[in-house]
Amino acid sequence: MAKYILAHDLGTSGNKAALFSLEGKLGAGVLYEYPAYYPKPGWVEQDPNDFWKAVCLSTRQLLEKASVSPGDIAAVCFSGQMMGCLLVDGEGRPLRPMIIWADTRAGAQEAEMKEKLGMDYIYRTTGHRISASYSAAKLLWVRDNEGEIYKRAYKMLHAKDYIIFKLTGKFVTDYSDASGTNLFDLVKKTWDKNSLDALSIPPDLLPDPYPSTYNAGGITLEAAGEIGLLQGTPVIIGGGDGSCACVGAGVVAEGAAYNVLGSSSWISLASTAPLYDPRMRTFTWVHLDPALYTPCGTMQAAGYSYNWYKNTLCGDEIAEAARDGEDPYRIIDEGALKSPPGAGGLLYLPYLLGERSPRWNHEARGAFVGLSITTGKSDISRAVLEGVGFNLRIILEILEDRGNGTGGIIMIGGGAKGTVWLQILADIWQKPLVVPAYTEEATSLGAAVCGGVGIGAFRDFSVIRQFNGPVKTISPRGELAPVYEELFGIFNQAYDSMTGVYHRLAEFGRRA
Image (tube, rainbow, N blue to C red):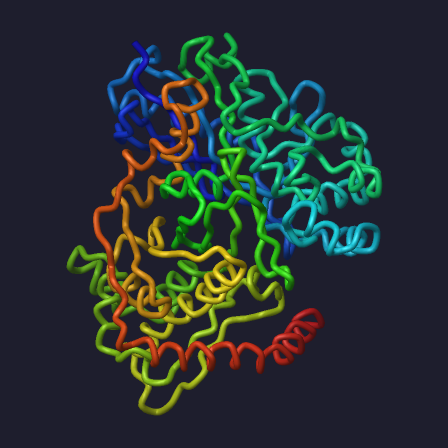
């Protein structure tokens, strides 16, 4: 009797495959890495054949690692990187590498969309600002620069959609991934005809959208031979990684909120309606539960900032960790504790990759503000952690200001493993932080729950509360509220003061 759900999380650096029992227990997990390619500045592409190879090999490795037979798999479901553009022909063959979410080449096409449709219309319809980061502008770039490929294209797919085609022969997507295209009507749950007409995009070029729990069909005989599963195993389409993370964190009803503290970081919550910010600082996806939405704000360089700091300025800590078999981040955390809250008046602006929400400024760059002769290494360490917290606080306050008050924040992602950073965040936000049993596996668990709902093994998404309950809570220290309130204002003032500098540096870089 089938007793496991196989979840694949197709990320930017690789595919995480995980087996979860029908009781929500992690059986085993494996990671298969694949590369990204950077042909030109601002271009980021991946080979979709690597996705398929990763899914097939990781599935076989996982079954062997867990001593599970193909007949034990009740369903396969997916989480995937969002906002991509993969064009395939009528046989499902990729016509070019996939342009992924991090690619920003489509600036001219972004401008075209603003001219033809207007920022307000797209934001109110799709829940997102017009941006070169989204699928629509990438699709128009192919039209304008690779016309022969565009003419041959039969469908535009996302990463997980391509794998679903390989498994079932069906060209489908789900509402959450569709909501990352700049072309999807959030409320009607259909492709927006006005946008398609204005941009001359054929409706048939887009896959049919369905709820994330939709059963795309059984694995075909040919695919079964490649992936090592039984023919007919149900394939539930799943969703974008952000929406899967939302479910995995346990945010499946209005009012709950969570933070993913990874390389990038975002704060999101569940809502029964899209959340529209008058200044368009946040955006809204469709939840895996089609009755819900996930208003969200995301920053580019959270864990990336900490990783950059470690690799660039913490050679001694890396060497000590290698010598003693320690984690270098733990050693850096211990150093940060030697600095008082506020890092001795040192601020870090975490804009190493520009910024999306809440700043929406691709020219923004990172900075340390307040260095003095008395600044020590521990101050710099603490400032990096605090700077990420200040930036995320802007997002949190926007979500609360729009009538979506939050209590405790559920923390998932690699950054949720330690306690030093979490305590700093709790103090800056003045919110209790709740750490569930599964932090790094939460996105895969969200996909697995989606698969279980899709095949009827689970009644609804509320089952996640049984599977990923809290294991600890980190409370804010109220006596630090005035300290961080003052520094939060200075942090925002520092960013505002630097905007002209950022622009001039960007101009200089374009000339260099």
